Length: 300
Image 1 (cartoon, helix red, strand yellow):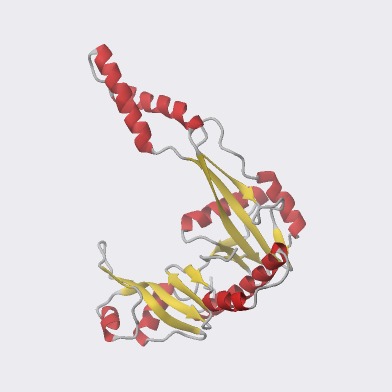
Image 2 (tube, one colour; image 1 turned 30 degrees about the vertical axis):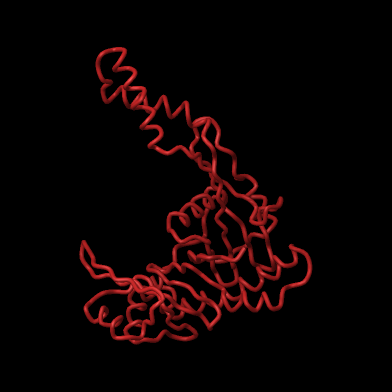
């Protein structure tokens, strides 16, 4: 249940939908299996492997986007088309043309796709209406776009927009690294990626390496900008901040250690409740601190 990536979006206005009303809307677009020649489907699934599409605790909401994809590599279709073309050449005495090859690939695709295995994945999404956040547990913008697209189709609107801060994360991360310190409750960790400008930028990466030394900072002096920076929050959460504001590789190390030493009592449902409360509380503070460090929301 613990989020490992934070792809943030801001809430435009107030969120007035109750968990029950939200559940009802999501139930209209649940994940359906791929049938026939459909290669991929998307819909809402339970975030807890039960019958509920929305888990609500207080004002916090948790839900999941499900994706089912047929596993049919293009190389399989290509090889099957080549084999079929060889049979045609042996029988007819000439190679199939481009149009016929395209028709062969389409024919083979229609034959193999219904028989292909399907793989499912779930992308968890957390809405914090009070703090104005929608957080997708994903490290790629594409996954976030999928969530917002289906949310818009489901609700008829999407009151969320991408994070846009007054200062760019790249500019701030470069300044923090040059200074050897981060603002507020943040501190530098041991991972970093820097790139130069231009169409073919040079890149340098440091992993599990102290970032305070001159061997690191000289790259900033040489004109490189920081695109990824390992950081810690309040000595409790470690993560990598990536431009344009995606928080990746989140590790609740101290929190999980405390949790292990003080394992919540009760059944799995009660432990889930406790973990969700702890996670959302910590991440709300982290995201608030990050917004402040980046100068707040960009003004129009």
